[in-house]
Image (cartoon, helix red, strand yellow):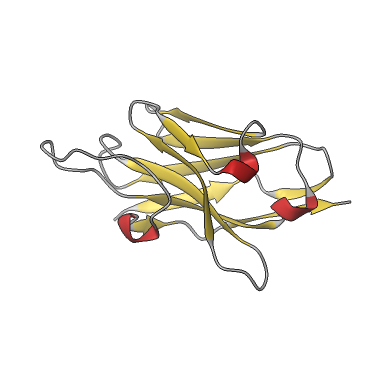
Length: 129
């Protein structure tokens, strides 16, 4: 059974930092896309940052230069370092995984939600001005 468990959310002031973590279990942590999505109240969920199993990363423009993805493959943990946080970053943050692709599948990682088969329950990030 695949599980993704997020942690690290909280409340900070503008300019502060948080580090989110997502621990994955139940599948081979390889040849996959991992991503962070967020949903603010009254808004649609949006993709934020994405990483593949060889650490190629993609960020949406609104977080470039402020957010950074890393992962510990041995521990199966994905991290999202968020610096210089702004009130508009306030949202529930969700970790997602495509699961492992077959060996012959070529893939790139991005914000298409339909590609992500597994989702965590989310962790709240609140940034106050």
